[in-house]
Structure formats: structure tokens, C-alpha cells
Picture 1 (spheres, rainbow, N blue to C red):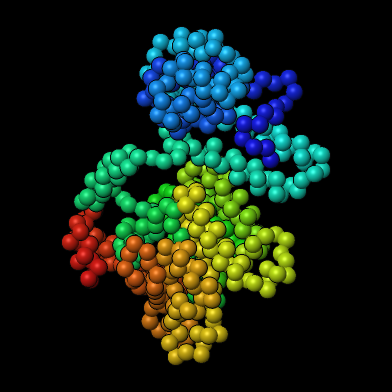
Picture 2: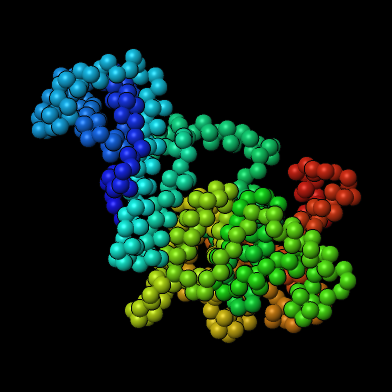
Length: 482
């Protein structure tokens, strides 16, 4: 792929640019040195289409960086000393710039337009270069697509007010204080609610963007069920976009489980076809409800982590509302599509790299991420206490460092075979960054493939009894105690 600023354009096409606007930016920098830092933070030198403009911009920044007073004389001297005065248009062009605009009031708006033109030129060059490589049969289609997705994402996610480089602390503090003020008294929801107060309350109201949560269990320990139910709750109740990367389950099977969960139709009936009369209206209603959710599913057996990252970047670029990504499960991910014997021999290191890649992706896309994984079931079977421990994860150190939360799932009925009583599910968050370690107990309704919240049930029942639409904090505490 070409480097940013390389001019590769379709034949007979003039790349997008605005020379008078570029000159206006340079003129404003000459007239008022106070705007130089702001413009330099917003624009790279190659954002200027004309070579002369780029050279003048670099010289202005260089003079300003030395602390010297900027004037037509010092600017011309800088260009002459570096042997670029003639290429920059000479002293006549510098004099012309002084009359290009009357002032510097709108320089940042003008710079933003120059930057937008540069982005369009860069994208056009990258796409043309990719097309040329593909038609010349010199590039792998998948690798080229991944590169294009990665290059497109920053432009699709970047708004007009986006900041580049360092940001002064004062620019961040006031928005944070405003957010804290809004949170005071419960005025604003913090994070993305999972639908389970047992999880949300200890971590400050829900999942946070840029954070990675691991859910680990033995095979059949409901890690997938919990992750998918959270994705459903996030999409349905929080109305936040959710994406599921399913490396094990097919899309059809996942949708069937979701239909059972939402429609309250026994999953066994869906598998056998033994439907009752009231099942079809429930399924139809559930299908309509699911179809309206901001929920996306990718089904790829044993995907390469690079493919996963490229697909997530592309989806986030197309749907900015994506706030949660679920990856199920990481043992099925590979470092590359073309595995090597060395990678197979060093699987632990490969999975460590995958953990850090997922953590980086969560920060890059500004989404919350949940990744499921399996623990060493053989090791657990040897113990009287079947609860998983961090040591049952062979790469637990990587998870502790890469993940904000590590939840270890334990379902007692897997080992007691007790036919009576609730089918509970314990999630021990042995690692919880920015929070104390805690344990959440949920309820498994296997009939509907549904993970339910005992605390939420209690709160809803309490609201119904007291006729409160929004209980106070004390009332919620009373409901939890009940």
C-alpha cells in the first residue's frame, strides 16, 4: 500500500484539493503565530496538495519550533538555508501569502477542510493501489482487503472535532467533570448495562468502552450462554450495537437459541420439532423483535485474529453504534490463517498474543469486549472443589494483564446432579481492575437457553408491590435484601 500523501489517482482525474484555502491557512499562520500550534496539531505537512504550500508550512513550523519570531524575512531565510526557497515559490510567493486573507479567525475551520481533502486523496490513492495490485495478480485478496479495512477505519470513525496528538489536560477535565456531575444522583447511566445488576453494580453501572472481559469455564459451563445473553440484553435494552464473533457455533444455531430465549419457547421443542400451538406466535414475535435489534453475527470456523480484527474494524466503520463485541471462544482463534508447525508447538504464546490483540482492538474501536475461553477441565476434575481458579488458565498471566475482568464460571448442578432447586451459576471475578474482586450469582433457565438475574427479579417484584416506577436507592437496596 502507498504511504499517506502519495499521489496515485485515476487517469484524467484531478485529486480533491482547494489551493486558495491552503493559501489562506498559510497566510493565517504568518499573520498570527498563536494559531500555528493548533494548525500543526490538526494538519500533517502532506495534507497540502501543492508542493510549494507544503514546503512553506514545514518552514513556518520549523521557525516557530525554534522560538524565533516569524516574519516574511525569517521564513524566507529558513527556506533559503534548506535550499527550498525556489521550490516554495520564492520571496514573491511569501509576499503574496500576506495578502491572501484579512485575518486568522477561521483558520481551524479552513484547516479542517484542507485535512478532509487530504483524507479523500489518501483514500483514493490507497484504493487505486490495491486495485492495481489485485489486477496485476501480485497481491493476496484477503491480505489486501484487511489492509484496506485498516486504512479506511480511522477516516470512518473520525469526526470533525477529532483531536490528533497530545491534548492538554484542561481540555479533558471539564468534559469529565460534566459527566461526573450528570452521574451524581443517578442522573446519567454509566457504562453499558449487561442486564444483570449482579455484574453491573460492582463495576460502576456496566461495561466500559475499551475494556476486555474474559469469561472462562469448563466445556458446558455456560460461558457462551452468558456472553450471548449479555449481547442480547445490550442490543435489546440498552439499544447499543453488539457484534458476536462465533468461532464454534453456526449462525443458525445461535439464532435458534436466541429465538428460544426471547420467545420463551423450549429449545428442546425447536430441536425436535414438537411445537405446541402457542409456540408459533411466540417465535414470530421473537423473530420480529430480534430483527429490529442492532445485532450482528459472524460465523467463521477457526478464524485468524487478523481476520477478526479486520471484520470488527469494518463493522465499526459502517455502524458507529457498535459498543460491544463478543468473541466465542479464543481457543478457536489462530494467530494467522496459514498456521505453522512452530505456532502449533507454541500454542500458549499464540493465545497470549491473541489476548493482547483483543485488548488492543477494544481500545482502538472504543468498544467493550467479552471473550470466552475454556479452563483445564482435567485439572478441576481432580479437586473436591470444582470451582475454576485463575491457575486453571494456562495463560492466566496474559489474561490478568490484558483483561480488565476475568470471570470464572461455576455451575453446581454439573457436579451434584441434584434434580430439584434452582440451577444457579456463579461467576467469580477473581480479577477486576478498578474494582474489588466480587462474585455474581445468576440463574440458568436451560429450557429457554436463558440466563436470568435473581437481583433483577427481586427489584421488579418490589416495584410491582410498591407501585414504584423508579425506586430510590434505598428501595433498590431493600429489594436486593428481599
